[in-house]
Length: 339
Image (cartoon, rainbow, N blue to C red):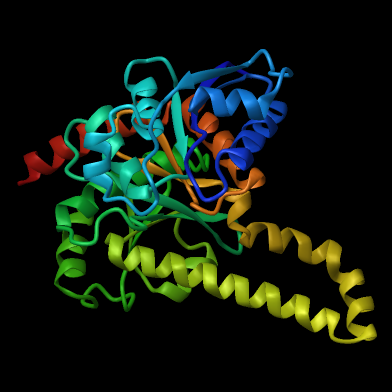
């Protein structure tokens, strides 16, 4: 396994720094090619690590922290030595191959844009969240970065999603769909109708509109929408998954028969539970910036942090950023030629 350097924001998230450090150490144990950089207040990190620091772990001092309730752009601009800024600079300066943080999500996006910069030809970066389906997974773009968008943004995100599915999902010809309230070309609001017309001419395998209920059937590898709709969809999925899983657990514990049945079904239910558990997925990539940036859940515990770091390492090894840059260059050129 090739060596990859991941900068982990040790001060970001509700459970930082203790759970973040533990998750980073777990990722080191799981990936022999990983070199981990813990970014944060060095004295605090040394106290947590003690004297048994692994060889593949280093500390990068950052004296400030962007709070979860702070205004993202303002905090990133004023706190130059925050763990979010320092972590993003590690990637921008070529000292790390990926940056992972469970901190203020708006702050992470602001630092990625200000410090790591956008890829040429891109208007707005977008969050891509893998969603489990019956047969695998689909990438939902945008799941929260941009609430007000233009059709051109969705066109560009289709190019990014196509590159992601090829390099991370290992799909040779990803199916790209547009989220709408009906499968027909004539369905949707003004944004959807205009975006559909653009996507028909995109250099991707555009399969048309897809309804929310069809997302989980495996008929698309990438689903494009605006960040407002995408975030509502994502939060709804998380809520429904929690309700179903907790309902199954409560039913199993309600009687002796249920407990026995639960024990018998547990080996079959565990894979389903894992696929629906956000901790297993770790975090979501911010697509379109000039470097790998993984935004982890603010509630990330040790397991979620470990998986977020491993996701960042995977994206860095795959050459995802270079592939997205190439896809944008080709797609934007084609769009201008067609126009």
